[in-house]
Structure formats: C-alpha cells, structure tokens
Length: 174
Image (cartoon, rainbow, N blue to C red; front, side):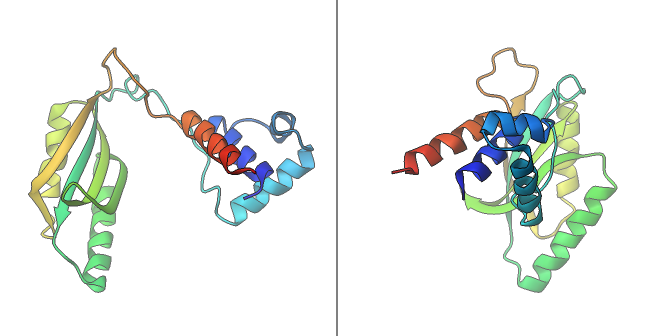
C-alpha cells in the first residue's frame, strides 16, 4: 500500500468527517489527489463505511459483553442455513450486537460482542442464543465490561489503531 493511501486511511479512521481539503493539508498532497485516492479505496473495498463511535454509556448502555461460544461442526450447507437463521433472527430483536464472528481460541469457535442496558438484558441474549441447536450455549463464557466504570484504560476507538498502522508502516521503510 502506498504511503499516501495509508495516511489517508489513518486520517479517516481518526475523523471521517474531515473534508478532502483538510485531509490534503494534513497528508501533504493536493485535494484532487485525496479525492481520487479516496474514491479508488472505496471502490476497491479498502474503505467499507464511514461511521462514528458514540459514548455508549450516555446512550443508556452499561455493559459490553464479549461472549465466546462453541458450535457443533457444520458442513457448508448447514453453515449457510445457520448464518441466515441468525441474520433473520437478529433483525427482529432489540439486541445490540456489534459483532458476531467465527474464529478459534480459548477452546471456542465463535465470538459475539454486544451492548446491554443492564445485566438482565445480557441474560436475555444468553437465553435467546439457546434456541439455536448448532450452538452449545452452556459451553459459552463471557467477559463483561462495565461502561460506566470510572477507571478506563483504553476505550474503544479507531484513533489509536490509526496511529499504530502508521507506525508499523514507518518501521517497514528502508
């Protein structure tokens, strides 16, 4: 990836509301270069969406749950059906899922990150998950983060990731 592209992505991760003119000034290129580069990165899928991260606590959420789950082995067809069932089921629920993904680690093969107004809301998600015969909900563990805890180490943000991306690229340069 070119230096200009990486710098542009990093700046957009820090603040996606910056104009192309502001981005050009920060990156050190012309505004038309930023516009062309941004359009190409969007078209090629490097930039998937523009968003912001709110203060979840101010929106009424008190808990962020990271739930690790185990599922039975599914063939390709069953996995497709399971994915569709989950997607359809989530549409009708008031559960605030940030992420549902497959993976491997800690003896689990799935992870769910969700937001909850209170502990009861979290328990409702656990109960909801029990309906899926391909999940072993009894064999699931969660790590609960109190969003209104006064001691914060590094809350969810993409600014720190953007800085990390740029420092990694600098280390690769000869």
